Image (cartoon, rainbow, N blue to C red; front, side, top):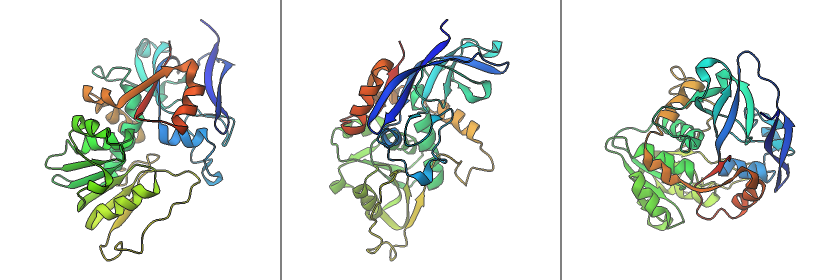
Length: 324
């Protein structure tokens, strides 16, 4: 077995490379994990790749096992699935999820990995981090049975939020995006689809995930009287103008942020970060979700792949990196 590992680094805004580094021997309670797949969380990772993390967030935005510092050079990512090849006997050969950057082999404490449920294949488990984000967003939104729910933005987090919301009894879920080809995606998720101009509105809850100024403005328009708008997009260092001078106050709207770094307040007394992620993994036990992973490339090609995903993603929802 090689005593080195290959990892992906952002070396300058818009540029990346694969670097070789020594792999430290594991300690008594550590594992060596061989990567199988990693996912590109396109919204956040594109901002990191393009050097758009504001200095005020350098500390809060650090990912587990990140190396380097913002803006660059930095090793970043958090959607890793692998197989344990060395460590305590109870982990040997197990397929696990870990919040680790893109790297072909790595050493982590045993407490940092989450064994995959038997019914969740490794290739689908790259969705776990974004499923966790979507789950936390619904907790923050306080969605109840029978709610009318609009989700603006059909990226991976928006699609996973629609998937979860559509399975709450009585909820009417509308997934809204500027790309008409997302209609087929909404259908297999169990949601209605609409282009922005055709959205129904009058929603009890609006979840915004598009990462655009037009998207959050639309979200505010779609909320019913005293409705809640949950902002799940992160804009990096970009300022965003909000139309708070129109009917925002007279309709008594609630605008609420949601971020996965902390468990939603309504669940914090009973859920930990670890139990929330394990729940997110269990919610991936549905082959429907394979349709969200609609792009794939080899790890060796990741520098070029990230350039494409951060500038012209096309129809990509979740991009999967394979290690072979």
